[in-house]
Structure formats: C-alpha cells, structure tokens
Image (tube, rainbow, N blue to C red; front, side, top):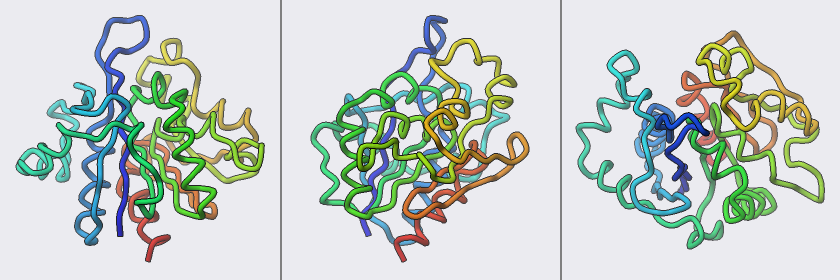
Length: 224
C-alpha cells in the first residue's frame, strides 16, 4: 500500500506579510495513521525540499499526540525536509493521494498544473483522493469528464464561519465552502471545529484540523 501526501510550498499569507504553510496536525495525524497501517508514505510539494509549517499550527495550545510523536521522530522530520518535487511524481506508483490543509495550498496547489493533473490521474484511475480542511481547495480546478470533480459529489471543507473565526475571510483568495458550492458540490458541514469527514465514492474530504485522523482512516478503508 503506497500513499502519496502532497504539501504546500507557499509560506506567505496573501499580502499580509505574515507566515503560513501547511497545518502540522493535518500532516502528522494522517501520516501516522498511514504508517501504523503499514503503508509506504511518500511526501511531495511543488518546490520539493522542506515545506513551510504554519507557525500557528505549532503553538503550545495546538499540540496533539501525533505532533508530539512527529517531534520525537527524526526519520519523519528528515523525510519532511526532503519532499519530492511534485512535477517529478506520477500517480502510477501510488494507490491513493492525501492533501493536508493549512492556508498555504490556497495560493499554490489550487492552480498548480502538476497537482491538477495528478489528482485527475488518480481519480480517472479509480484511486482514492483525500483532502482535509483547506485541502479540498485543491479540488476546485480539477475536472472529471469535462465537469468539476466536485460537481454532484458530497463534499466538505473549512467552513465560512471557521474562516471568519480565524479572521482571514478577507485575506484568502476565496472561501472553500463558497467555491465548492459554486462548482456544484453538495457541500455539508458539522459544527465549527467538530470532527466531520465525508466519503463519496473515491473522494474523501474532511472539514477542519479535527477531521485529519478520520479522513485518513476513511481513505484507508477505501484501500482495504
């Protein structure tokens, strides 16, 4: 079982000058769900090398067991520091793909041609595609049979009210909830910050950081 995880290379929050990147829990929790299930996990990002961690995701109040495990795992830290370049990766070598969120993907992975082609390749081959929190934003430029991949599909992702709560509504390029709806996705959500994951066929989406583990576990179910 081989799973590809794709992380952002973008480290600036719009025009604010503030740092961003991927959300550490949304990487660490799925990473260990996959590893503990015996999966071979490969990491990639648009630029390769060390993807930027959103510093807010590593604050004391944000710590989780998975994050602490990652901190004590030199091999995992080394793998994260040496991600493959996304342009060098092909879906043929993997069974599924998983996109952690954080705000970074909103600026690079959404429009990244390699990412779009990769997701289309996985989906067209009948392989599971999963994304959590802001991760589902990467689906918004992806098509299947000429239509948006999310059209008619049950999906979730970071809610408008969650974005408002972190005071970035006017900073992000678009709101994940609004864009998924605009493209014809059958968007659903739970209460803000609640664990909520949806599976529709081979598409798995999680609402927020709390949904990282459940999204990873649902992806595993599709592979087992």
